[in-house]
Length: 496
Ligand code: HEM
Image 1 (cartoon, rainbow, N blue to C red):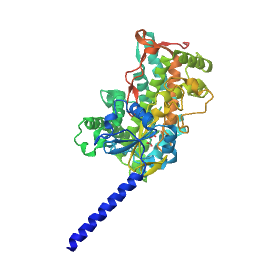
Image 2 (image 1 turned 180 degrees about the vertical axis):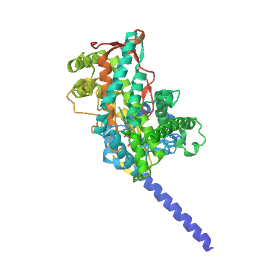
Image 3 (image 1 turned 90 degrees about the vertical axis):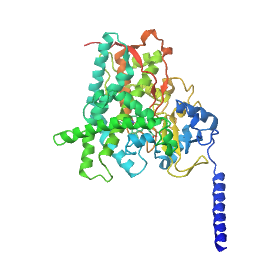
Image 4 (image 1 turned 30 degrees about the vertical axis):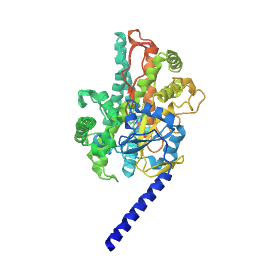
């Protein structure tokens, strides 16, 4: 009898606690959001372009919106004010990254910088990359190499101009940027075939596509093993290709390590690993994970930004003309653009800012809440995925007039820049997880755009009119043009 009473008391206490917790939860005010389905939550609302789907939903439900992706509570942030709260006021709470199958398989269990969980490992790796790759001194030291690579691209375009060939500008810029990234990080160039017959551009794009595709394994962990969509199999295949390539690079560096006078980034990381002096665990897999970051984040972002800016210049000939006039005045038709010219090109600066605003290459960036937090009186629970919709912010009609138009003049007399302090324009993010490659990215984008506009007149193929040039997007962690940008160059500088 005593046992029955004791059991009843325990059941009653458990029930009372459950009710109490439930009531506390009910009193918490969660952000508004659309009605979801049982089990799936809101996954069915996501189509090909998630940034645009979320933008439409946020117009109805507000800038801090709750959706449930399978089992994962998700907060979508879509206004400059709300982004400021997340990336500045509560940056210490939202600075982590969520688990994903992509991060798991491509980056050796989140050992890279882009997907690493917030904590001492991430802090150390970030410091290492900042000192040895992204410091102003390092960026400056690669200037002659950048000039040489840009000159090579211009020479090859001159040949194509003589033959009146239609050029795949997307591929041209991507290939030059791949060479620059390889020289900077690995100390030498690699051919497309060194990686795989599909080449750098295609494989890097596959990485950024798979990293953002809604993989059921991310939202229902037990489905990861079944891999209903076949996405995880594709991730594993990709990871094998990159792993073999990175192993080869590390082996080459180990073999030539002692004889080398000047050390590249891989040598520096090997030194740190071999010295055993790192205050954190640092082995071969960690080096491979960080190198993969540099290939993916370094190669695709800058060239995709250039691709979008050139697209808009071709769609707006009067802007192209005005930019060319500035280049003629500052640089002259006697010579190519030098990096030292860039600071004198004010209209170029506006064109680049407007291009980055309109075509945010990283439109939807995932963060993770490390603790419960209240933002704008809404409760956000620990472990929630936070999707920052930079695309929605940068096209918000409450901030930007005619937000879908390409209007560089909107920056005349404006102090807004892209460095992470102005929350209405954040192509590089802001706060702890903001882009460490920002200064390098800005130099590359400004240099490539200026050089291509200064050295060549560009004509669309098959008599296509500027207004017919499409701006269809291929959504991914980096969002590029759906189809490559094609144009015919005519060389315009005075031949010496
Ligand atoms: C125009 C060029 C670029 C753009 C628009 C861009 C944009 C971004 C954005 C939006 C983020 C995420 C910010 C956040 O989580 O809130 C990011 C992170 C990152 N970017 Fe860039 N990026 C560019 C160039 C580069 C380059 C050239 C490199 C390296 C060679 C690079 C390396 C990284 C890395 C490693 C991270 C992860 C940082 C972390 O999680 O701590 N990026 N970038």
